[in-house]
Image (cartoon, rainbow, N blue to C red; front, side, top):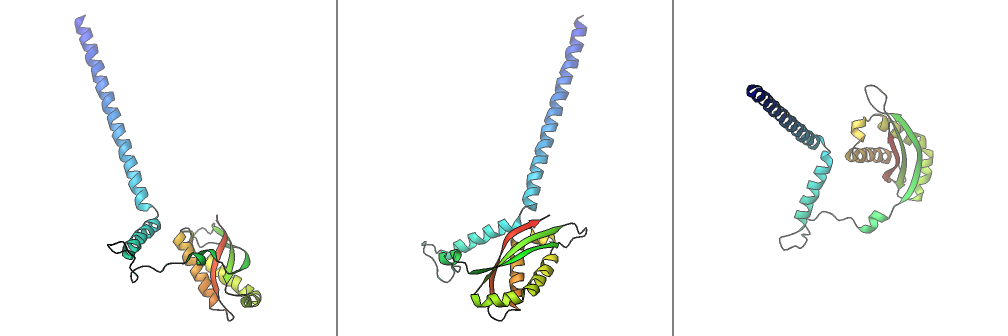
Length: 186
């Protein structure tokens, strides 16, 4: 009878060891997956944010000498507070709905744009050339893919391209900036 008890305790001890080993292996695998996921997310994350924060640090360190005073030559051009709060005349455009450039053709962009113009003298010229400007904007928007316009940097490039194309066709003034008041991708 003593022999049966020894066999049962030996079998039970073996099961405990194998269960413990299985739990340890599962925990290690879960930790490896979590760490791999974090690394992948960081590598595939938004590089624009990292670039802009590094650029800001470089500008800040270049703008200050070792004694803490600003260096006039190396300091970046400072934007005055009034230029951020002052907005020029706005010229609203209608809503644009275009298909984005894609293989499936199933993505579309709905955007509403306001033009910031230099003066009132430009408004009549914009009224007469409105169909031309709508055509230009539609062609530019429909030539973009989702990847190109989904980042902040992509939207800024899109704005610059539209402003440049519109200003090439204006005589009485220029468009200073454009503002997206509605921007929906589906």
